[in-house]
Image 1 (spheres, helix red, strand yellow):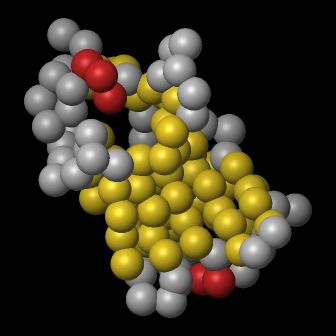
Image 2 (image 1 turned 180 degrees about the horizontal axis):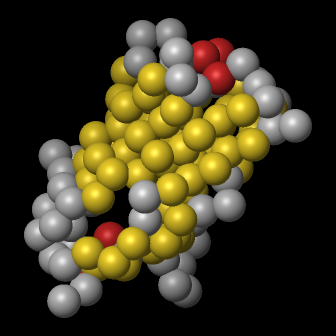
Length: 116
């Protein structure tokens, strides 16, 4: 059974930091391109960051470049998103995504709220 389970979301003040985690199971994690998406209220889901195979090249949305870092631990089947200097506009539900060819998996999402 394929599972992607996000955790680490919560309420944080502007300028603060959070680390999101995504625990993967039921598929060969190391073969998959892994991504973080987010969806703010009233907006479409948007790509935040990804790690492409095989070299682990990372790309980021311009709105988070320099503040967010995506990483993965293939030994533990985990994906991470370190978020620093958080802004109110980063408030959204954050989703973990795995893709390999035509196979696409999504997590259930974790809420991040940036507010004073």
